[in-house]
Every structure is written in C-alpha cells, then in structure tokens.
Image 1: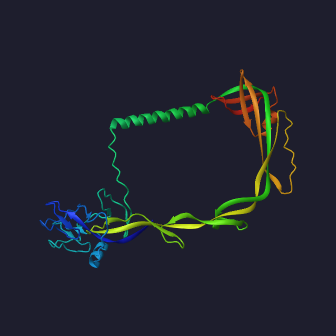
Image 2: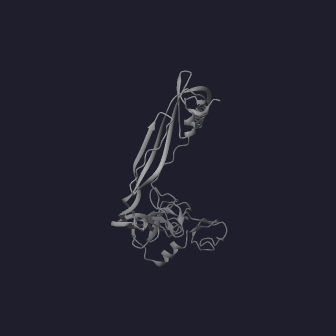
Image 3: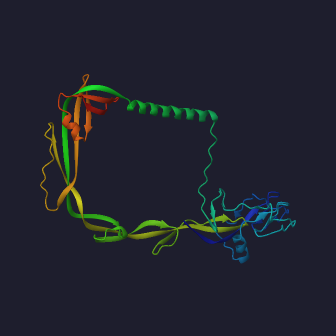
Length: 338
C-alpha cells in the first residue's frame, strides 16, 4: 500500500498544569510556563478540515523527526538539538523522544511507522477483561477431555479382530474413460491464454492491487487522516493503491475432453474390459477397476472393496479366508486360508 503525503497542519495541546490550550510547535505552556508533558496528546485544530501549513520552516521541523525531552528539566527540544534550550543540559545522553506515529483523534492508536510514511489506524477495539483462573482451568479441562475422547476413538477404530470367514459372493466393475479431441471454450487473462488459442472477445477487468504505479493502473485512495509527527505538526496522509486492470478474454482451443465412460460389470470370474470402438478423434483417457467381496463370519456379513484383481480371482464362493476386522466392521486385511 502506497502512502501519499498531502501536507502538514498545525496541532494544539492542553497544558497538564493549568489546562491552557497551546499551539503544537510551542515547547512550553504560554499561560503558566510549564514544560510540555512527554505523553501529551496533540489535537487537530479543526477536525473537519485540513488547513495546510505554508511555512517551510515548520514543514522542515515536522520532517526532521520527533522532538525530545530534556532528561534534567523536562523541556521539549527539536530532534537535532544537542543542548536543552531551557537549562542547557546535554541532550546527547538520556533525552527521551516524544511518541510519534499516532493518528490524531479521539481514539488515537499507535501505528507502525515506515520512514516518512504512516499506516492508518483501525477502529478502536476495547480490550477484553482478563480471564479468571477458575474459568481458564475449566477450559483446559474441557480441552483435555475432548482430546482424550478423540484419541480413545482413534485407538478403538484402529483395533482389529481376527475372524475366519467364508466367501458368499463377489461383484466386479471395470471402466474405460473416452476422450475426444474437440473445440473447448474457456476464459482467462490474455497473458495466460495458450498461444494456439483463438481469442473471441476481451474486456478490461481488475486483476490485482499494486503499491507502486504500473502502466495503465488506476490510483484509489482512502480518506485523508492526520498523524502526529512528534513535533506538534501533523502530517496529513492518504493510503493509496494502484488498481491494475488487464484484458480478460474468451477463447476457443482444441483439446482432449472426456466425453463418455464405458462400463462392464459382473458377478463371476470372467472379468473383461469394455469393448472399444473408438472414432478417429477419440482416445482412451484412463481405466479403473473395482471389486467387491462379501464374506460371512459368525452369521454376520463383511464387505471388502479392492482394486486388486489377484485377490478377486482367489475369492471363489465357499473359499475360507482370514479377516482382520475393525470394531466398526471394516475389513482391514483379507487373506485366503491354506
């Protein structure tokens, strides 16, 4: 996000000692002479408008960095001052810079500050009250119970029971996907359209936002707001992005497309693939096979679904098998008995 500086405005502050209102650039109270408190909050003279400063000296002061307070008498000094203007104390050691980077307003909050730029302040969010110790313990206990429940169910679901079973019946299904080479209509950004496609129509469409200018982009800015520079002068900024528009197009292209699926099924061991009768512009897109075996063990039916043709060939009705069955009745392993 680009941050545009629109100009600078005069701020005001209220004296903690006598309550008098003072211009932002004044270092001590004009009424009682008290030094400005280091945590004083600046206010905008007119919150509804921006009366930009024309004085180049004040603008340079705002750009020089936040003022600093003397460690001996507390007086406010310019950022580049070496000695205090009030007591002549050394400012190179122990001087504390004024807080800066605050959006000026009733609910002003600190924002991250980049060199000569500022980010906007989000709406004030009241902090939540601290959580009581007892409530925290209850929540932790509930969390542990839930974790324990899921862990127990996972262990239980993975536990298997060995059973001797007899094959009752079985079924099979085999599929062949058919693809055809034909015209396909699609849409995409012009830069991403395959080179061999035929473009039919295009229109300009917003693709992304850029923090820097891109040729043909449109600048979009938010509402201006004032940021405390720490000097008593406010910097009026706007957060802007460059909306980049590119051509989005409809196009046609020749491609392989799924058009049909041939399927054969059966209940015997004479397993076969569907008969193929491909046209000139068609091809096989893929093959799949599925086998279902039904077992009986202790009067209960268990089902095994697999894509292993070798297992299906051995699953003759009446043959004996050793099964590993989960508590939910899922067949996890099946092996024919010797």
